[in-house]
Length: 538
Image (cartoon, rainbow, N blue to C red):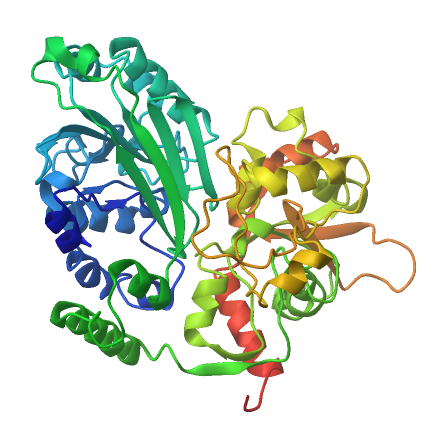
């Protein structure tokens, strides 16, 4: 694609909006984590790169990001609102440069690029995420807007397009530069999405897990001769278009004009060999078991026999939430849906699969001997997301990212649910349309603020069922009646919300009352259950 851009005299920028760690065995299965993946990423040529929240949850991951990834990408790495705590001095230093100025290769366009993270607060204590609003008040940012009049602002960020941070950045830039084109590239929300802030400011996000290559084309950028000429140069509006390209070889062959023989490069083959050798070293294809059927996060209603959450609730948790010295005591086990990040497909379930489905390192905590009358109210409160949680982080962080800032069909589906209507997405095709088209593979059918023409490949729509923030399993309950007290067991990620819910339920508990149930992660427990219960060849 870079060669095609050179041949056509246009410019191509490759952008990475963060979350490069966690969620696959290639990163999670090694000691230390990322032993192989940092070398793989280093081989990729990226023009603008920023940090995601997953790089910051654990102190060691944040240190590796600062010590390895930032130097690997040098001036291409931007951290407009992120600092790192130097372990030698204890002082704050920018994670990377605050912004980048550069000229494009072929057209010589002046670019000012910024890189933000949303107002994240669960970062490790060796990092500092400055709220975006505070960053916009800093002198370096105000000076940048006063002195720099580029042909294009590029704002990359691990920020959902519907989150308030991008709107604040847009407003600040637009106040100082009335006509400058602005291109926003977002992430975090796990959705394909696009919106227009105004005729010269456009934003897009490219889904989740690198399933999608987001393509934004910007035409009619007028190069200003000087800062004074910017307003004149930008009088004619730029033109933005977007495509969501499925990240597979078919799409890549189509858009490059190459084929199975001509598409591979020697560099690409070498990187593929690196990945293959790393997977073998980590034994990622080792089979834990054979899944008897598909289990879905959102393509099956919860609760139902095809829901991955129902499977965890009714089959896995009752078997794995046990503790020898609390063996005979009734317990409630609560897990947040956001701790599960992918479906399970019928067939081989491997070591790699465990990290794809459940990538997090959260252990289990508990509060012993909670009156059942108090404990039984916790789940409803966690899922109702009421005002009682205003003093804590946003309760939506317990859920899957797609539910945080829903758009398009998902938003319409959730509204129907609130109104008591059946809560699934309706297929768009009519019977007549179905007859005239070939059978389509299920996949993304995106509806964003621009329309429904963004998907590069046409798919049959997928049903989407909203899910709660958390689900719960009662274990070792009496056959009749209710227990007097229970051990309240939960993933440590949701600790802050559980404490608030307990207080509102009439329980007087704090962090001091929380004990460790097990240091084994849900990932480990799930894998062990599958080894024991899904035996046999596929």
